[in-house]
Image 1 (tube, one colour):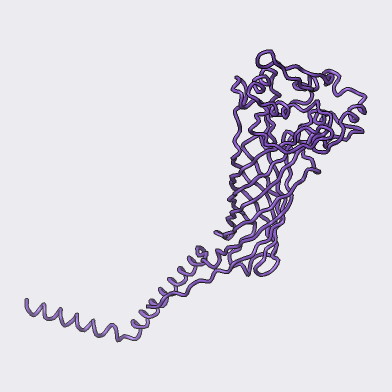
Image 2 (cartoon, rainbow, N blue to C red):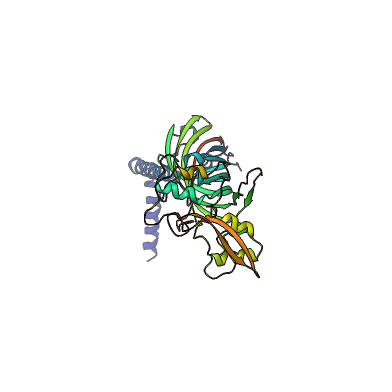
Amino acid sequence: MRHKYILLGILYVALFWILPTSPSLGQYGKKAKRAALKTRNKQISRFTVRTDFSKSKKYISFGGGFGASNYFGDLAPRSRRGSFDFSKTRTYFTGFYLHRIHPNITLRGALSWIRLRGDDYSVADISSPTNDEKGRFIRNLNFRNDIFEVSCVGIFELFPTDRGYLRRNFLNPYGILGLSFFHHNPVGKTPLIKGETNEWVDLQPLGTEGQNTGVPGTPQPYSLWQIGVPLGLGIRYRLADKWDLSFEFCYRFVFTDYLDDVSGKFPADSVYARMLEQGNELGVIMSNRSGELYAAVDGENRAASFKQWKTPFNEKKPFGKLKDVEIPYGEGESYTMTRYDGMENGASPRGNKRRDYWLNTSLNLAYILEIKQKPPKFR
């Protein structure tokens, strides 16, 4: 039995020394190791190429832009959606910060100022006005709104930038989608009386649709802080190694219909009476402006324009005649409002239920900041 174990030990030692020294077997072991290492390196290389988007490629930029803003809403020249008054195009300025987070995606944070304008008097071609133009001319409302906006949007580019900013495409179309938070404050110009000056006043505190009266059926006061959804298209041009020039159209769809202070119907006489009891005479004046002799903003005499219209606005629902309406309030008191009788619920109502929005058209310039990667520390 002892001899059996001794023999097994001798055979084990012989195999241990003979196999590694065999040329064919040793060569086979080296080839296998090299093949395994090569396969492993290839897998690591493929994984790195597919998933690595290093810090240097996630470059950042900053810049600014300017352009035009156009308002779409109740005080547009036409009653249909998409109508706007080109002559009321106003200014848009923005400053922004860009951070590329993906070969096709860049995040942009921006601070912007936008001005919107609308004026019923200026939309009509007096020589041959359309029905919409006549209606807005007689309604005679106006507004101006300065908007301060903070936005965060994603810029989704058509072509990837995955090899660093120096190898980015010279032209790259993109889409825009995000969220914004803004403050707005519509103002209107008070009636112009010959020989006197008029001024811009805040409209929201006046409650021109009866918001502050508490009368059943009147709307609630609207907030001056609102949320918007930027949605647009653009194209970026590589101006230089570190400079980008872009041109874009970006709509702001908002969750309010009061960018112009106009949304619903003209208040009833009972609501006007309540406003007068509250001492809000200016709110009554700014609510229905159809009877004003002079255009508040342009200062022109509106009576001369009325005389040129020899045909009625609508045979079935004519505007009626300019008249003085006595609105009773308080104890034995009354207020005289001059307005066109019948127009409140006829051809040109005060507003509609479609929400307002605006369009920014801008030219933007951005400068790229190069991010240098730190070399790894050796231990």
